[in-house]
Length: 221
Ligand code: DC
Image 1 (cartoon, rainbow, N blue to C red):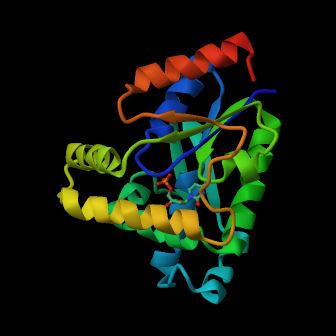
Image 2 (image 1 turned 30 degrees about the horizontal axis):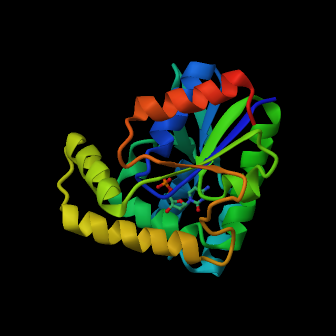
């Protein structure tokens, strides 16, 4: 069984890399951030504050959340509705960051993620994969890049989707999310001692993918 774990802050390129890796190695890709985003969206739709543990506990145990692959593309379903686009809206990023700090949410999501990983060869990306979700993964990576490079990537991504954004506010938000994600009590974003750190500030996506594929094909752990 191949389990590849990739952690890193937002904008480090991890989901793009994970997606391409899955294609190249013909294994499943599970985007764990998308799961937290769907939880944030659900809270918003119910009018519940993402940091209100009591409110969140009213739906999290029975959340109807599914990640499916249709023609090689990941789709996230919430209550039967395809929310793949809705969860990418900028507002949902902060909701996801907030709701993911609640232990009840992480427990539920991690249970679902471990189940998926125990059934098939896969690559998971997120914040706590190497140390918490899959501590026994065969391959572990921590992808990063400077906050400025990450804000620029996010800016270009949102602009290309037709959204109106301001680079400086994105940079502030990225720093705030980094702080949130690495200072929460439960499974914070951190570099696993046995993970290889890849700084993507000056690397192309193809270079990163080739590096990981090479390692996996050689069977190096
Ligand atoms: O990777 P992303 O930006 O889609 O993730 C959205 C939020 O979800 C992020 O701010 C932190 C949280 N997250 C997490 O806590 N643990 C994960 N494994 C993945 C994401």
